[in-house]
Length: 215
Image (tube, rainbow, N blue to C red; front, side, top):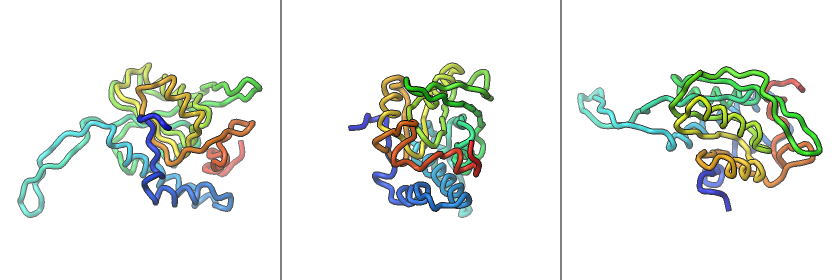
């Protein structure tokens, strides 16, 4: 049973399964893959909006009638994990067009002991005490996402949300054990990692497929 902080969208939203069908299919071309990643970002942005703080505001309609709706108290900082997250970030920007963007680039090193992560580029604000959304399509071992969460905490974030397309049981366990205060939103949860620490059945290398190049 998953922790209450884990939210799996495809369990109750059929369109998420439709997006996954495109992303998982090895016959999907780059254009369709990118478009599906953007849509995945939109779905995750909308679903995770319940984690953010909203305030009531009064607006006047074209009929001259006042009514009360909601607006964000503060835009979230979007942290994209390069380069696989680029099109997911685009989807989030459709929902939060005024949100600031930060970037983290990490390279993983595989060994018999597991996976270690080296950050070779980051562009983060010196201080951010508002909400943060960490965006990474694949939450596999949890190492890269966990490092991104730690960096968000170091700059003072008051609320951290993780958005992924597919998460592994192993990766979710890692996040829950090390960052109990973080909410995770994912389209699907897959059961296994292979000997290269890729999610199975997964969708392959999300970075290679979205960028159209092999690292």
